[in-house]
Image (cartoon, rainbow, N blue to C red; front, side, top):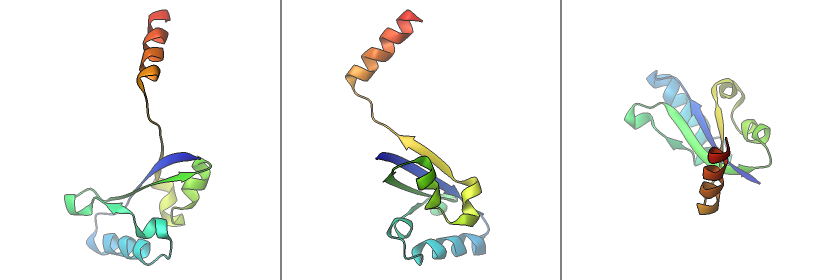
Length: 93
C-alpha cells in the first residue's frame, strides 16, 4: 500500500468552516473524525495521512462535495542510496 497525505481546503466563512468540521467529526469514519485542521492558524484546510491501494481510493474517502478541491499527495521516504542514485543520474544528464 502507498501512503498519501490528503489535504482538503474549505471556506473561511465561520459557519461553513464549523459545518465542515462537524461533518468530519460526526461522519462515523475513523479516518475523517481524526483529521488535523489548520483553521486556528487561518489555514482553512483539513489534513490526514493514511495508506491506500491507489490515489483514487484515497480520493473516495473525501466527502463528495469537497473532492473537487482535494489534494492527494503520495508520500515517500528517501535514503542515502536514493540520494547517490540521484547524483549519478544528474552527472550522466
